[in-house]
Image (cartoon, rainbow, N blue to C red; front, side, top):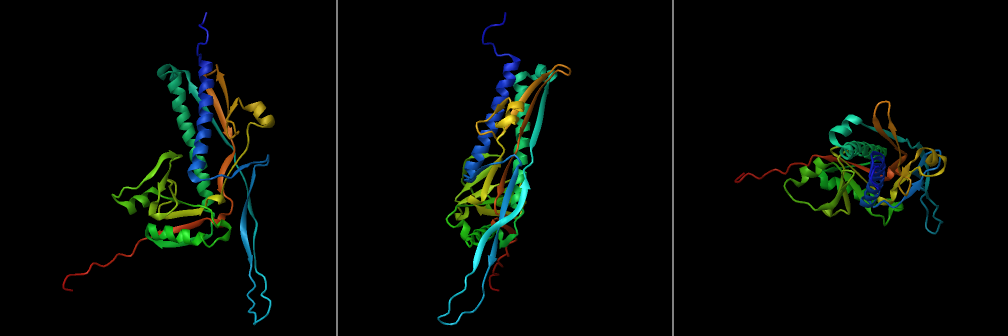
Length: 298
């Protein structure tokens, strides 16, 4: 007879699935905390998100002395609507892998690769939304490009008082710094690193997927994390063996005897996006003009 409270293969699969779900949920929360994002939007069943744009109606009438000044109007109107796509990932660990490496290691290694793939999908989707902006500036070198970005955003009344965040490519930062040390946040989430007080800016995030030579800057309050609560309703009851407490991700698991694999399926629907696409400033880093070195006696 097996000893009581013995951890079996089935128990181990359950433990690993719960660990995966909790780790993914923690990474999402850490990412939002790193970015300063506080706006969470639970998606409805149609998985739609709405972006917005500014519309202006400026009256350019020249008024004479004593005449009533006509009104001008700036308002926020609906822009594009998007449907958030599901992520559905299946992981299977073979009996051979379990025999060779042990169940814990075999499942952990597969989960690590799968977690990275899901996180990369979220990062790529976020960058796609940043790139939708039509608000663009240029600057000679990294410092001027950052300054011009922040200067442009300061003209948007809607973001008045909101902290700003910039996303830069690590190669652009490395080229600017050379051998100069820079303080960075101790936590590295989703491959993002926060630079503290970089060039006097509030929040500069090193984002490896950001194109080299480009900077994307926006107000923190313009960023929204939208997600489908997969723990709710029939969906959670039928397919979700485990979910995190907010329902951001769910997992189902099963053992297949016909091919001797232990299988798990992870699924959800979430996106990090800019609610006002043109509230993102894209800056192009131009090569600085070299300063001529004076020739002695010239």
